[in-house]
Length: 198
Image 1 (cartoon, rainbow, N blue to C red):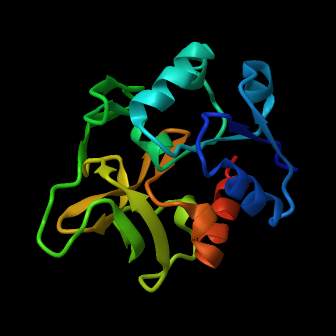
Image 2 (image 1 turned 180 degrees about the vertical axis):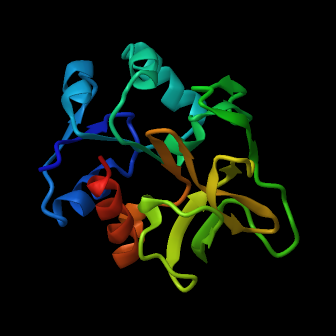
């Protein structure tokens, strides 16, 4: 049975994320207690708001270094994914440095408003258990103004004027730019795939 810890990063999507997980029959504890996080079988770092604010909250809770040492499956969502990279243009902040590159603002393009809000498909680049049973017809829901570059760690991309990293992985650490808790059955499928990882 999965023991899921959701890191309390102050994100506005935490309640809906907990509800989405509970619908799958999984109890989740919302916490900043590193001992609870270490003892969880799976850990999710949500994030809504700015990268600088999220990093500041995690630093004040002395969670950055312990997070880097976690061995169990870890999932960063939205800003939680962006924090996995070297740095972010949003607040000009240094992040975890687990993935190479700098998160940058989505460029203004004619007919493509920022923030990017709405449903888009994924283009899977590398097979991964996290995306088991995903198809080209699966839509996921986005709300973001900043995006991560495409790299060797990119498992899937989405295009909004240009491709950006939608799903990434570094060892036991995964990240998704979209919101699984707002992505209906497709989001539930991703969360269940994550909770099956060992």
